[in-house]
Length: 226
Image (tube, rainbow, N blue to C red):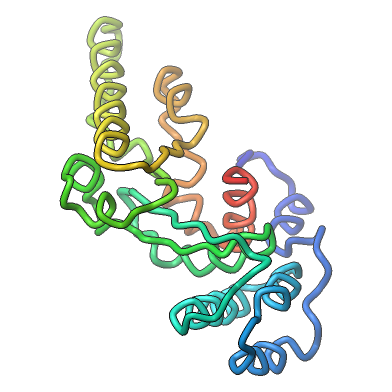
């Protein structure tokens, strides 16, 4: 996110202004779908609006309950996503699930325990590696690597960056070697480390920001995954 974004740009992302506003009877429609045996098409329709955090939570709960009850969610396509992060991700999972429905995906998220990125990736018995996932999203910011400042010492800085990249490769190898899961790093991971920016778009500061809504974060993340 551009830190120099003007107020109009912030409002655009806060409100998901490119989407239609949710219908006035959104809550009633969600309640009606609780007893619908095949709610997939209607879930996608409701997800196609500019939903706030409460609406996203309501829709995500509805999707999860329908899946757990064994109701078919077609035309939504099932997709199981593991999340490895050094930040708390529970707050954004409902936004991801609800936003995914807008893209035609019946998303199920399996977040790893907080701060257990390397352990979950490397252990064949970890929840992430036993979950038969379709993909794993690695959402790690600069604090997840052993990074430190080395003013005036280019060799030391290079060694630190190499160590961080080696850690990233170990995580990737662990995920790839313990199942059929594909690995979805944020595109800027390598470039961010190598240019010493050390910033991930989905860092704790970004996703907890009062300037950008969680629904906007989820929408952007889903556009990356699709």
